[in-house]
Image (cartoon, rainbow, N blue to C red; front, side, top):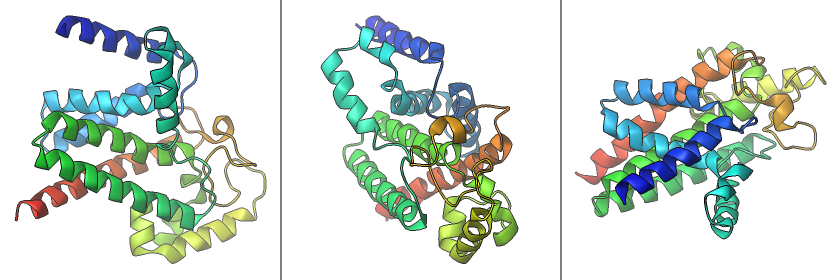
Length: 239
């Protein structure tokens, strides 16, 4: 049974790699980011492997090919769920702030539940899923095009950096860059699927895309912030 389940998962992941379009960084970039961050935070190879499965979940049911090997009804339900696991159609700072707060609230409750049940595998899956969501913000939005570093004096500024430490710099960056009009990404603060920006025109999913390097660096920094926050929750719950 274990071998059968492994082959099942492997085949799904193989289909995902064959898919021509993706709604986030290509899986190789996800793997590199998670591997480096989890190593830095003291996680082992097995923990990394489980987290990568959770990370893949967010995108895997967006591919039509998955329906070939998994029940169609299950795929439809999963698709509705993962539609809420991306930073889509967030038009301004307040919506993005609200989404992050909801993500923190939901992740905190999920982590506490897994801790109470001593569910280590479930805990690692949550880490993988939530890290994917964090990363998608920088892959899907025009955050880095706004050149917020210049207005905040924070290198590779993450959304947490700005919303917590220097929210006025974001307002200034949006105001200035909105004047640029139709150049790549510089029309205020948006994530894809808005009336004026599509994912295909805005994404930084792979090397060669405009601003990919900046988005990658901000994602790495945000990846470091997230497990450290989760670790703090665990320490606080054990006091």
